Image (cartoon, rainbow, N blue to C red; front, side):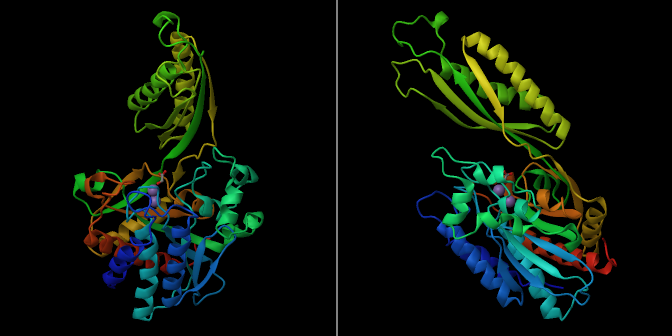
Length: 413
Ligand code: GLV
Ligand code: MN
Ligand code: MN
């Protein structure tokens, strides 16, 4: 069954126009006016494809195609259309457009599934200044807590206020929750965002697991002093301690297997060159496909900070945010995806994902599986992000065939 690749191409082109002109790249930041407009357009596409749509209390756009058997749970497909600031045109977007094209393909072929098919454009996968990623899928999985909703940005603006500002109803977030009995399987098509598929020369990836993430805030306390008169060996320079901490994150991550670590911000209390910084704040994260490794990375940074504080005569406090544990993709469902790829003549390689995805939250509800297609140069979260339309087409075919194969298995729950 052939997807109409023009639909995907035109959708990618259209959404690339619904972006914030004041930000670089292709920016449709979650809950911004551009994101609201983009998801309204997605809802229209869902309706035109024959789906019954609704928007839940946190902004998930959900389209439903009834199946022949109302007693069996739903097959859920989708991804997200929000982007990081300065992001690209493909991350998440091909999974939403691809899911709608699955529906259009089934409709054109006159195929009615046994299972209900739900298509979701999950709200704010990429996260926000409040530090909460996967907002929509978290709410659907029943894991969006009052603590998440009261998380605030640097100005004190909370996630709940952000949701309200986009016209949603955070006080009803618990109404977004789906029951595990409602979902037979979750399938997500996504760009790889890394170099593996391109390096291996393979068009389809089957994701084995999605990395967990531990985020931290490090507050460094030093002493404000005169930059011209304070000897180097007696300074308590919070800036220098922060700089050492940044390199410690790099060193610790580089020494691990499949671990990565990134610092997002370094801010200091003094922007002046003639005053030694008293305070500094460093924010960052570690990722690993193994939950126990995340714990070990946390311990290593704490130990390193002890040594680094000693070196700079500073004192630091390290706070870990909520840890998102790695999510294991379902083995049977991954087999179904690999079979689907083989059925339509594509090789597939298994790989883990260093990027996080809505599948992490959906895996709490049901067996989850992901299909990756190659990213040119392994680049993503940047304006240069690119995936050839031929690869996207292959991915949509594999997604369509996977949905048919899941539908052919009686009831998976
Ligand atoms: C989102 O794409 C993330 O991996 O943080
Ligand atoms: Mn994504
Ligand atoms: Mn992303």
